[in-house]
Length: 392
Image 1 (cartoon, rainbow, N blue to C red):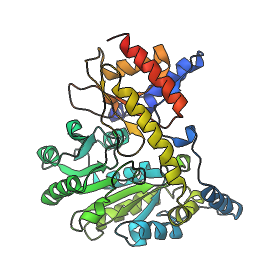
Image 2: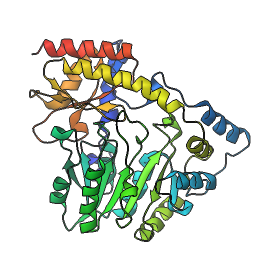
Image 3: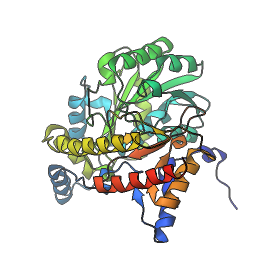
Image 4: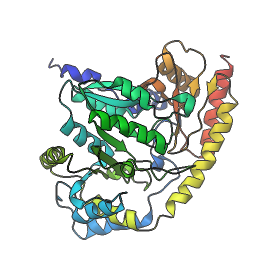
């Protein structure tokens, strides 16, 4: 048997891995209540019609060829003008989702053995890309006692001579936390002191319940900074795979941008016809966002009420996105992965284990996606509550 490269053993993706067990159970006839995946279109959300029309028109007009490897010109111009602060179109790269944007940026930055500071809890793709690059992941811990706040002191304590970059996810997946201006400024001060690149993943920036989202790039012009965003979440088209990365400090990152261009050339281009949706998305009607947030607020409030009434669970109320990361208040034998597996096998309620996103040693969590309709959420929380009370 031919064996794969050894470093692939470190590539893990908990969100889809845990779903394999649920699929097996569903094939056996068990009803699954899915609260595990952040895809609004699995539920009662729909892509805005003007975006569908833009892509349909592009297809019908014959725009099915390769586009420029850095992206469609009008799309790059729209993103550049939309960003705060605005950048030059040549500093924008259109990618196959934010996933590819992260991949291109980290691949251009990291050598094998370099260290990258990643949020814990955080999106597991960050870890998977770093593992593939044979870089060393150094987790920095969000402060659960302060609403999953960014902790610049913890970040500073993790910096070493091999540290190359800090990744921020704001709003955060999986906690739903929204970083304050002061938190971001403190992290930027660490990056400035140690000449570290900051990658700011802002894909949930339009999905807020309270307060405001502060774009990291508005807070500095002297720290190497790359912003990542896309259409998947706020514009309800995750399957289109439309994302982008932008260099906000091109003088500091000129060589990295050249490396990203080489990587982009090597993969030809992102999906061409769907890039025709970027300009109408950013400049056209935005009324779908408050409509979506009205649904999400009601579902978040339902989740908060139900979870806070359950034994053995504590919850930091999410301020953005559509995730929450409740904590298990007693140790679960086998960890939180054993918890979510036992739960889905017994009740059909499907969450993702906290360890899949990273967490402080000695803590256990599970991620809730509150995108489903309230009837589905209510049934899921009924099952969870019965499961917990039976073991209280």
